[in-house]
Image (tube, rainbow, N blue to C red; front, side, top):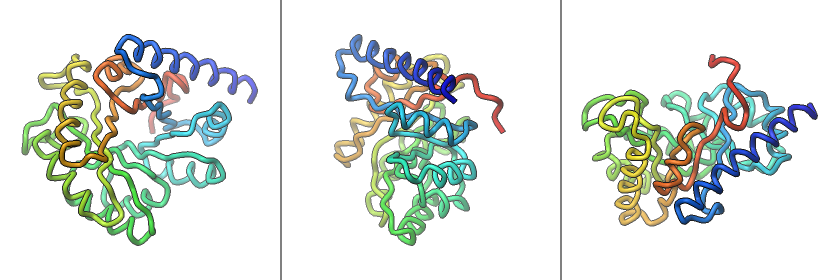
Length: 239
């Protein structure tokens, strides 16, 4: 276990240095960028080691794994983020542990989350996932709402009991005009965020950037980066 702790400490320090350098290049303060460590496929023991190294923000993308991990780490002072595509039949479980849901992309999901959050007596921060490869009415390759649907979804979140609009999220698209251009995609997300904050000032989160493109995300103004393999290592195989 001590070897694993040392490995995680080294990887975490490297990622934090990347964030600091990116912030320096962009004229930003490192404290303005929050690192969320995505621990999918890795055991709860790694979450505990990361918590011991100062990590407080962790993310999962599958409810079954997330629910078990959150329960086994309930004694830790952690903020849990759900970042995967979310089906309505999973929301009752997700709202029990998630403090933030990054993948709100349709009105039906807003209603289901609201009902479940109210029953659980919780208030969940929700980010609208924006599909930058999607035109209105077309399906995005990685999920998400079309840019012109963001305002309607945020309004619905603001009106929904148990929820609040926390910001926007995107994943660098694999197709469409932003394919291979993560920096441009993240700049577009920042524009969408600016318009959203004019309507919902508390929606300040801009969740963008992963292990391969965190620098581009920081340069474009991301407030939260979602980092998995750069901290935890090459994944043992997604289930």
